[in-house]
Image (tube, rainbow, N blue to C red; front, side, top):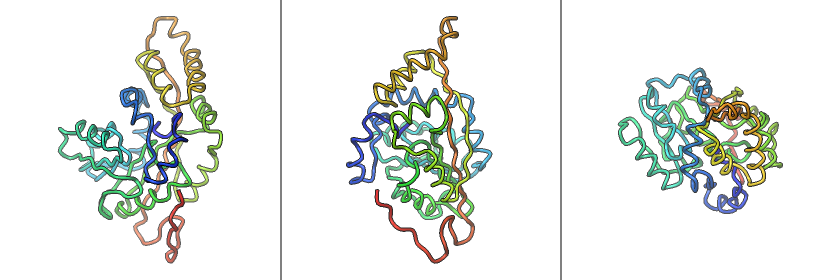
Length: 276
């Protein structure tokens, strides 16, 4: 995931100055992150839930924090147009190259807090494990509301930190993270939450190890790798090369009202800037 990494704490001061939180996994280990993208949700459960929540066929989609554009072609299969927004210039370049043959897709450099999109210009804003983690993401939520058309939806996919075993490794690396507090934040902000159980599938042990090593501290990664090997012990002994890992997600969904009042706001009140 883009937000859990062993160097994340060291990046917070820089993030406050630049409004961009560096992603030490995809920014610095892009090949391993590509392996992770291919391994995630091999049964398509997240895509199924997203489509149930809002059919983007013939609609305009924005993917915020799109990285190197892995999810853009999937949206383009049904959407009228797709725009990926990514703050890191090298990833913008690689995302543009990935979708070069798709005329309905473009990639723009920009931040979630200041989207390079017009008011009321898209029907779907999608963000997957990239920015919106709870308290502190209010600027991005306001920007998503700004660019959504009335009746459009903001769909945020993040990890279910209460789901084992992955959530337990995350909690060990980030003991100050408060899963119930994050749930309350999204609920107060008017989001529905659907929990989704997925299966990650790696081509082999080396692929699994390369991914877990960019997601966790060295100590927790070693523990996680040992746990995955135990879970796959019977298959590995039988000569099965593939390695599986259950991972839980949360899909938070909020529709932009067709009237003037936003969820959690009165018609006369205005949102205060967040102190990130």
